[in-house]
Amino acid sequence: MFDWRELEALYSAEETRALDARATDELGIPGGILMSRAASAALSALLERWPQADLLQVLCGSGNNGGDGYLLAEQAHKRGLPVQVWQLAEPARLKGVAARAHEQARDAGVPMAPWRSGCLQPRGVLVDGMLGTGLGGDVRAPAAQAIAECNQSGLPVLALDIPSGLCADTGRILGDAVRADLTVTFIAFKRGLFTLSGPECCGALILNDLAVPPETFAGEPEPWRRLSLETLLAAWPARLPSAHKGHFGTVLVIGGDHGMGGAALMAAEAALRSGAGLVRVATREAHLPGLLARRPEAMGLAVRNGADLAPLLEAADAVVVGPGLGQGPWGQQLLQAALAANLPTVLDADALNLLASRADWMRAHDAGHILTPHPGEAARLLGASTASLQADRFAAVALLQRHWGGVALLKGNGSVLTDGETGLLSDYGNPGMASGGMGDVLSGLLGGLLAQGLSPLEAAGLGVALHGAAADQAAAGGQRGLLASDLMLPLRRYLG
Image (cartoon, rainbow, N blue to C red; front, side, top):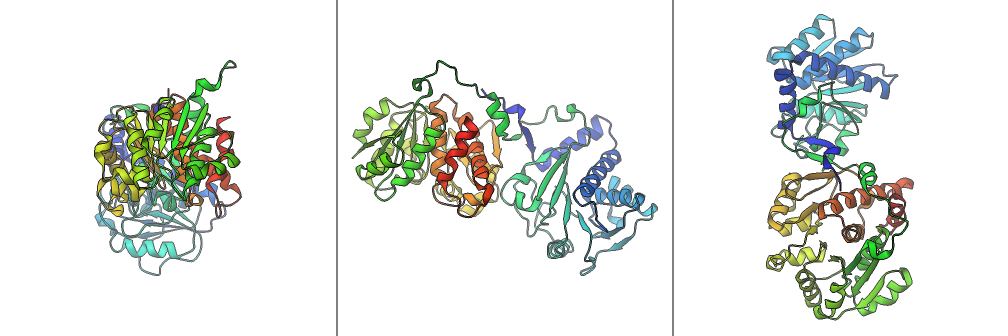
């Protein structure tokens, strides 16, 4: 149903360099012209954001990122704006278009001086042109000290293309990174801008394609795509007037061991809010009165073991297993029975923790599934450390998918998901979501979308974007104290 090609593409550093090379070498756009366009776009954005800036302090490194900075300084100087360039590299080290950019700025009379610790003046706007997308290891001197002093200055910062010290591929901070208030990135979005530490380093983010023609992007490997909730919802058909609940599927939520009934309840309510026709909850008998009181639309049934699930599974179109499941014998039996039913399935929480040591339970399941681990659960599924997975979330989710099949959805700041062919990223959501129950709401939402006929990738893509956007709407009055149940009404508004 969804055409993922309609979504914005996200590229690696190597892929963006290939785009730049194609624009210059194959399409004949001089590199100096692209650099001049980049400088102009960044200067316009700077002046729109800070129209009263009384000084532009431009920190220039040795590569093309520094060349962008030199040309921005030259253009600002010609407009009569006070400018000071701080050079982190000897001009003799500059090459190609970056060297020509320095010469152009020097010949225009732009004030320049070598950067030294303590040189930043306590006013104006800082422009970060120190390090670009080619940074391969941790930041070294003198850039490391310059980055630290930029961050300590209290001045607003504009980053050119990418904040210095941020990995363009992974969003990982390479030792230290500039915390910009505004980043203007060029030609194409870099995928590291949207996950892990990327958003907190970038501040507001603007893309300028430098007017490169569409054929610049032809023939590139299929990139990752940035989810757009508006685009996805526009492609989802409206309900017909003759529709009834049988058209929208039945979800079975399995979970809620002793003391954890709320997890299954929230997943059930989210499945209902997704538009599923019927939702059943297989849980401990002790939780049924609370379920009836909180959400009578969900049908609760007490189950003692895996055999009790059989009639419920026969009537289900999709299964959500894991919220509050526990890892004891009860949870183990229910998970085995759910997987043996071979229905479209969402696996979350304790279902993932159980599978980490019982991979053989998945062998007979080929009806389509979505795994929704947070980084800690993902590390257990792969027998790796959380830190190693977080160092490259794109590689981690691809490894999860190869190992476990189906659709892997690695949650976090900039959630990433893939079915092995198409990679998607959601940058919806906010820090207020760091509270219990958020994953239960997501799993129920995904189950509801599966029951309504979406493929696992479609359900995961739409669901994770809906989940984050609903949290953003719910947090409009403040992020602290945001509850998972606060997402229910925003979910309904989006899907209405």
